[in-house]
Every structure is written in C-alpha cells, then in structure tokens.
Amino acid sequence: MTDHPMPICGDDYPLTVKQRALMTLVHRLGRESFAPRATQLDRDAQFPFANYADMRRAGLLGLCVPESHGGHGADYATYALVSAEIGRYCGATALTFNMHVCTTLWSGLLSEDLDMSDEQRASHQSCQHLHFDRVIREGAIYAQPFSEGGAAAAGAAPFGTTAVRAEGGWRISGKKIFASLSDAADYFGVLCTERKPDTQLSRRDTLYLAVPRHAPGLTVEGTWDPLGMRATVSRNLVFQDVFVPDEAALMPQGLYFQAATRWPHMFMTLSPTYMGIAQAAYDFTVAYLRGEIAGTGPVKRRQFATKQIAVAEMFIKLEQTRNLFLRAIEDARVDPSKSTRLRAYAAQYTIMENAQDLARLAIRTCGGQSMLKSLPLERLYRDARCGSLMLPWTAELCMDRIGREALYEPGETDA
Ligand SMILES: Cc1cc2nc3c(=O)[nH]c(=O)nc-3n(C[C@H](O)[C@H](O)[C@H](O)COP(=O)(O)OP(=O)(O)OC[C@H]3O[C@@H](n4cnc5c(N)ncnc54)[C@H](O)[C@@H]3O)c2cc1C
Image (cartoon, rainbow, N blue to C red; front, side, top):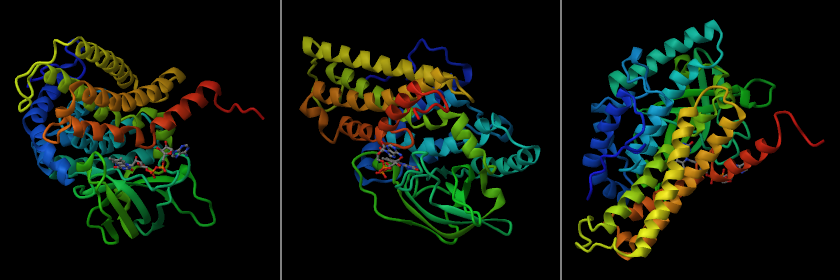
C-alpha cells in the first residue's frame, strides 16, 4: 500500500518547524505501530495500551503541556493536526488522545486567556505544576468523563454529579457514562457542580476536578460492546463520597463556565479524529483502486469511469471538509466573533457528517471485498458513525446553535 507521505493538511500547508517534526513523528508511529494493532484492538474492544506506551516514550503525552513544564507546548492548531494524523491509523487512539491532551490544553494554554483573580492565578499555577508534572515525569494519563445521560453534557443543565466542600478539598458523588479510557486513565477529570447549602445547582458553579483512579469510593462499572470506537473502552464511573484535595482542581472555581462561554473551540477538539478517519477512507479507496491493497489481488480497478467519478466526488468532499477544518483550527481563540463561532459549529458538523459519508462512499466504490474484517475500511465505517453523536457538539446540536445564533443576537427574544 502507498505510504502516505502527505500530511493530513496537504503538502502545501505552511507547517511550522515544530509542527512538521511532530507530524513526521506521529506519521511514523501511526503507520508502523498503530495501524497494525488496530484490527485486534477493535475486535476485542481493548484499550490501546501499547500505543500509549509508544506515545509516552515519544513525549507525546505532554503535547500540550507548556514548554516551561517540560512539554511540547503545542497550541490548539498543532494539537488538531497531530490528532488528525493519528486518526488516520487508529480512530480510538486519536479519540482517547483527545481526552488526555485536551485536559492539559484546557488547564494550560486555554486557561491563560481567561480572567482570574491574582489569588486564583497563584493557586492555579501550583495545581498546574502538580498535574503537568504527573504527565511529564510519571507518564500519567488523564480522561474527561463529562457525560451523564441528561442535558448537562450538552451544556443545557448543571452536572448532576456534585461536590460538597470538605476540610481541605471536596467530596464528590454521582455517575458518569461513556468514560473513555476507563480501563487506562490514572486520573479522571470530572466535571461536577458545587452543591451549596440552600442554593439551586448552577452551571456557574461547575468544578473541574482530577480524581485518581484508585480513590476510595470510585468504581468503574458496566460492559463495553459498541458499534464503533471500540478500543476507547468507555465504561461508567460511579462516585460515592469520593474525597479529593484542593490541588485536584484542573481549573479554579468558576473558570470552566467562563471557558465554555468564551472559548467555544474547546468543544471542537473531537473533530480532528474524524478528519483523520475521513482521510483514511479516501486513502484506502485510492490504494484499493490502484491494486495496492494486499490480499485483494493485483487487479487494478482505476480504469473504469464510474470509479474515477466516485473518487472525484470523494476528493471534493474531503477537500471541503479539510479546508473548513484548517480554517477553524486556525480561528480558535478566546472571545471569537460571531462569524468565527458559527464557522466552528459548521466545521464540526461538516467533519462529523462527511467522515461518515466518505466511509460510505469508500465502501460503495471499492465493493464487497473492501468490507471484509481483514481490511480497515469496515472499521473506519463503524468508527465514523460515532462522531456526530458526541456531545456537546453533536451534529443536531450544531444545527440547533447555528440556527438560533444566526437568527438571534445575544439577549434578543420575540416576546
Ligand atoms: C465512542 C464514544 C466515546 C465517548 N467518550 C466520552 C468521554 O470520554 N467522555 C464523555 O463525557 N462522553 C463521552 N462520550 C459520550 C458522548 O459525548 C455523549 O454524551 C453520549 O453519546 C450521549 O449519549 P445519550 O444517548 O445519553 O445522548 P442524549 O443526551 O440522549 O442525546 C441524544 C441526542 O439528542 C440531542 N440532544 C441532547 N441534548 C439536547 C438538548 N439539550 N437540546 C437538543 N438536543 C439535544 C443530541 O443531538 C444528542 O445526540 C462518548 C461517546 C462515544 C460514542
């Protein structure tokens, strides 16, 4: 099969020196190590421990940890490019890498853009030091279990998992569903609502706390046998009066709410995985039609006009997706304009929907042999299906936000 030397962004995209080095690194890891392991991990719904050992050795767990703390100090766009490149080879590795890396991105670079009192900034810096040190020195993995099965993960209600103030820290109770990395994370970055006496739960009181895997009162439960993204191993977490000290804070009190309001691209970070899957579906189709996929015979199918038209259709869809992706990841910033915010929703929607469509077209174009489980395309097809379901920016909710925000200015009503 053709080695795809072209990075996910195309060979004419102006990568920085740092980006080029990182992309070369993950391209090699992805092709030589992640892709050969993906079939078994998917079949057995097993977490990609070996891929994480490779990434730990290569320093990639510290991708978005600031350089001053020993990491690569990658910014948002660099994270997105690296993640998309990983997604070409193993979707589940890229998706779980998102949960880990974005924990450090949110509590690092992104939080620097937000308003904090001097006191909050000082305590945040000491918490950052603790969390970043764990990643860099101990190779710790962080997960992001937010979903609860209610409206909270969509941003429409306070989290039902709550924390009450205790001597020197917090006591957490509640349940999270779909906790990717449930078999692997050393720390679960839990979003929960501070429960205050005689006060209703409020989204403004969201806390973001890292709970160690072996904290007393925390149990991982349930089975995991889904359609796609099987190697994410996203089981449930139950918290029964789990104590964490103050330094467990990944963001100071009130900061998550501010971030969710002012830094919307923080919710677009799942999409690079699916950009990678879209590219992989296209790459497979080209290689298959060129007769380069081992085990499918040396027969070339590229001479048929119908195949050429199908590839053209796929290429156009892929380029539309890629260009919106590249624009949106460059856009990411605090307090974006209305156009920038709407473009982010449109990019997320397009990537998640087009990844599925490209996988569908790939199977239709390549034909029956291409959907055998010995080949990666049927896994890409199943993995691609998951993207538009992922909160808070599901395809439906992106449409919902675009429609509302295009038609109403902030504060406007029809009353
Ligand atoms: C492979 C995989 C890995 C995942 N990993 C994680 C993880 O690590 N951490 C994590 O927190 N979650 C994770 N999730 C969960 C995911 O983000 C969703 O929260 C989960 O799929 C929601 O399932 P649900 O059936 O409860 O959705 P529901 O909340 O019932 O939503 C169903 C649909 O209704 C729509 N909807 C929901 N709320 C509203 C609303 N208020 N207004 C209008 N429409 C709405 C949305 O379009 C949504 O797709 C993962 C999911 C998958 C598939």
